Length: 66
Image (cartoon, helix red, strand yellow):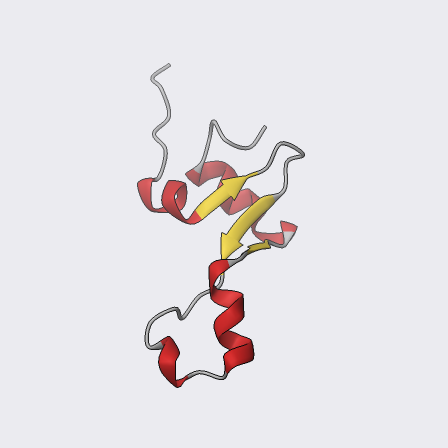
């Protein structure tokens, strides 16, 4: 059976912590000067992702989620 390929876009967008949480960055990062200051502070931080999309991520990152 051949090796499964990792989706390169998902590899760049999602990080997996040691405990198994999936972290993603806040979207809509462009043009942040026009956003409120409170919203601008969120852009540098990662947020945990809900587990409802886990089945999609298991296909995109076959070696990352075990």
